[in-house]
Length: 293
Image (cartoon, rainbow, N blue to C red):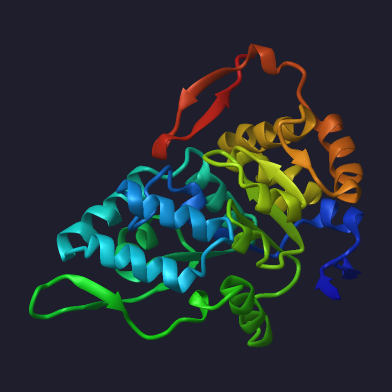
């Protein structure tokens, strides 16, 4: 399939073009970047059920209903979860999302978490959010079952959602799909990125194009060379750091064509004075390099 840019029309399978121009949309799984804060997974038994679903060993709807039955969250629990989503984001996730927005990439968050727990995060990060809804029992005040049936709960639900959004014109190629579960990789992105900072799932790694333990590592891939070369000011070190992760092999490519397209560019742009850098804290628990001249 082809996509239109200011530079003309290109095939999405052309790795050189992808490496040069980057993505138009970035589709993110929230739980992969939640630092253990994924909703309804805070106790051991519920976490085991989550793992089965993320590895493709249990249907998502059955897993979600079972977790809901185990936890039976209250409104207070959901509010606490909303704060946890914001407080425990993976370092760098919010920063890379904001840079993507500045670069003209539209962020899309797809999660099997619940809409009611995302209110604070929606204020923090500008993105299109797709999540599940819960039904609250008026008598007990607990959320005991799912609301309206969601496409996300179907087998390959995230991929079906992406196809629906593409058909409706709400997402265009090329887009990256990023997460740590097999369902995330099967979202069908032009570049499929496995996030391995918290867990490496063999089923996801078998199907991904590239893996990275750090959100910064996927940033140059989303931006493409044209945009990553154009940054200046405080955010330049963040982009440089992501380029360095690729050049130093921290980002592992499972697609040889992408590797051949990205790695030489990253090697060329790598700043060999990086050993003189010092790390300073950023808002939202992120870090950037503070270069000493």
